[in-house]
Image 1: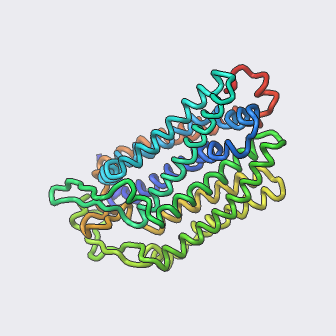
Image 2: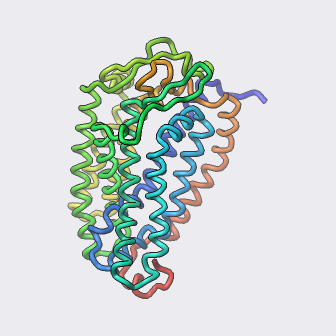
Image 3: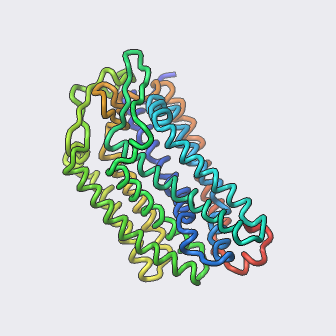
Length: 382
C-alpha cells in the first residue's frame, strides 16, 4: 500500500503528537501531583486530608494512561530518543518511579489504621510522591534544553557520560522549580473545582496565588536566561528532513540564544510563551474573584503554554548532545522508519479518539465536589 505522506510530514506529525501526549500527561496527572504536593499544607486535620485525597482518588489511575502513552510513543516513534533518555537518565527515572509508587501505596494504606502517626507518615509519603516527580520532570526538561552528555559511535552505540548529580545544574533546578509551581497551580485549580467551600478551599486558593506569581516569575527568568545565556544549539550542516535516522550525518554546535531563533523566523510561535505567561495571571484573577472554573482554565493554559514553549523553541531538536557535535537527536534523524510511523499513525487515529471520549465520559460521571459529609459516611472513600 502506498503511503500518502512523505517521511518529513510523518516525522512532523509524530513530533506534534509527542507534544500532545506530554501536555496531556501534564494536564491530567499534573493536577494529581500538584494536589499531593500541597496535601500537608492545605489540609490540617485527618478528615481534611481524606477530602483532598479523594478529590483525585476517582481519576488518578486513569490519568496514568497518558504517562504510559508518552513513554510508548517515544519508544515506538523515536527509538534513539528512548535509548538515550531511558538509559542515560536511568537513576532519575528510578527516582521518579520510586516516588510514584508511594502514591498508590499511600492511598491504599493510610486509612488502614486509625493511628495518627501511621496516617501522618503516609501523608508525607503522598507529599513526596507528588513533589519529587514534579521536580524531576522539570529538571529533565531543563537538561534537554542545555543538552545531555551522550554520544553515539559509528555503529550507533550510545554512551552516556553524565551522573545523577550532574543533572541538577542551576538552570535545570530553575526548570524543576518552575515545574513544581506550575503543577501546584494546576493542583490548586483542581481543588477549586473539587473541594467543598471551607478551610481546604481557602488554603488551596492562597497557595494557588503564590504558585501563580512564582510561575510567571520563574518562566520569565528562564526565558531571559535562555535568550541571553550560553544555552542553545544550531545545525552546522544541512539536515535532510527525509533522510535516514542517523545522527552521525548531522553536525550541531552550541549557539547562545539559538532557542529563541524560531520566534524570529516564525512569529506565530510566540503564542506559546504568551499563553504560558497569561495562564497564571488568568488563574490569579479567578482566585481573587472566586471563579473556580477560571482558576482551572488558567492553570490549564499555563501548563499548555509552558510545555509548548519548550518544544517550539527547540524545533527541530529533540535532545541535543552537549559533548559530541554528531550525536544530537533531531526530528529529522531520530525517528523510526517511514512505514512504522505510518502504521502507528493509523492506530493512533483509531484509538486516540476512543481514549479521549472515554476520559471525557469518566470525568463527566465523576464530576462534582467532595464534601466532608461524603468523607465521613461513604465507606468506599480512602
